[in-house]
Amino acid sequence: MVSSKVVSLAEAASLINDDDIVTVSSSSGLGCPDAMLAAIGARFEQESHPHQLTLLHPIAAGDMYGIKGIDHLARPGLIRAVIAGSFPSGPSSLPMPDIWRMVVNNEIRAYNLPSGVMFDMHRDAAAKRPGVLTKVGLDTFVDPDRQGGAMNRVSEASPVVRKVQFEGEDWLFFPNIVPRVAIVRATTADEKGNLSYEHEGALLGGRDQALAVRNNGGIVIAQVKRVVKAGSLPTQQVHIPCNLVDYVVVDPEQKQTTQIEYDPEISGEIRVPESAFEFAQWNAEKVIARRAAMEVGDGDAVNLGFGISANVPRILLEEGHDGKVTWAIEQGAVGGMPLLGFAFGCSANADAIMPSPSQFIYFQGGGFDVSLLSFLQIDQSGSVNVSKLPSKPYLTAGCGGFIDITTHAKKLVFSGFFTAGAKLQVGDGRLAILQEGKSKKFVGDVDHVTFSGRMAQQRGQQVLYVTERCVLQLTPAGLEVIEIAPGIDLHRDVLEQAEFPLAVSPDLKTMDGALFTDAPFGLQLKETRRG
Image (cartoon, rainbow, N blue to C red; front, side):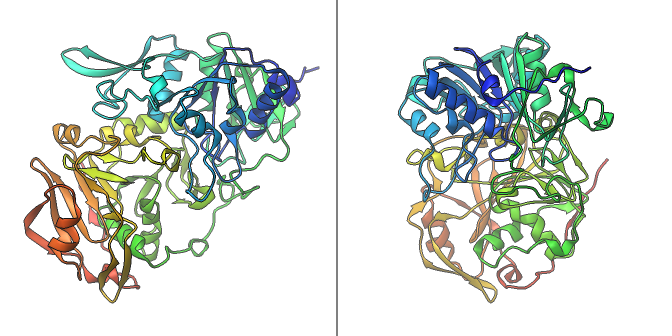
């Protein structure tokens, strides 16, 4: 007779000790073990234990839309430090998450590190190696020469990364932080503790996190939707085997992702027709996404980030090019149609769902052809801030996989509006600025360096910046305007709206008026040559 590993949420919460290092597998509202985190918070409310936990979150746990995640633990005394690839974020219309309030008030130590590096740290901890030696993060806010990943004043005195010389070159060294507890999530556990992910939209990094804990004598707690008889899960379906799992807790109400109970499209259990996907609505964002789409080639593998760029696959669909580009996102999906809204991080009709740590190895090594990302600020060196707004940091999630992706990418296309809050009108082949934005986004120095223009120059990366009113490229001399939208005055609407001088290409072109017309614009994908 098999002894089941199933325990109650309260019993599992009682297994966590004061001062433990706890690693949590999640991606915002996707795959978040929310019930288990709530149980830990409830225990602390009753017993004041566990206290002074150090939390590791390679990707954010929870959001501002219904999955509280780490906010269940955001209580004075419960947390000593948080080291995360990203944090809950959302619009200014929603209250600031409690975890952000603790960060900005210097109540806890908080660090933002690249998600891929955090997965590397787990893998190296599992193998009992000393830490991660990498180029990822050089000359960004993760670099000790800048903030060293510290998110507040109280964190600065306890660095988590060092800059070292190895074989005559600068590297970043992230010493391993060995967790004692891992909290992961799956769909199904059998009585032995084998875990399958058939209803999940992503595998994320739970297996690597479990390895790091089990190899160092800790405990692994898995939250699942259901438990089945031992041996009833097909062998190939088991993603985390029973020898890596100590305890199983059951939440039959476990949501697939924020505000989505269950949709088999998200987990790849069904394939849907092209007609199931809506085209992007007509506005200036769509114009930017259209112009970004012109930078991908037929047969390219393209990394896709959150924001305006997430609409590019819908542009290709509308233009009759669906399936000609393979999209890859950091949560692990490869191919198919990346989803939007509360399902972002998942793809419908995906060719495969990779574990996030493996996907990040692909990204860190620059194996893809193009990366389409967004920006908050751009400065005179071509550096990009996407990770922090000093006035309202909780409106951004942190760097996530952005730094891993951009370090060795061959070609980068950053998309965004030229100024913040401008009133724009697009149509009939032209752009009109009805009211200029209240703040500039092309600034002398960005508030947070998430992408280093200086390092991009050293690495020979091709970098474009696509806005609604112009396209710029990074050159050895700085930023250069290479295209301008029809209806736009170069000096008034572009050059005078930047805080630093912009060069203008002697071959300045006018953007195709078809981009600014509400109809398919005849996109022709670039021809990609390989080998």
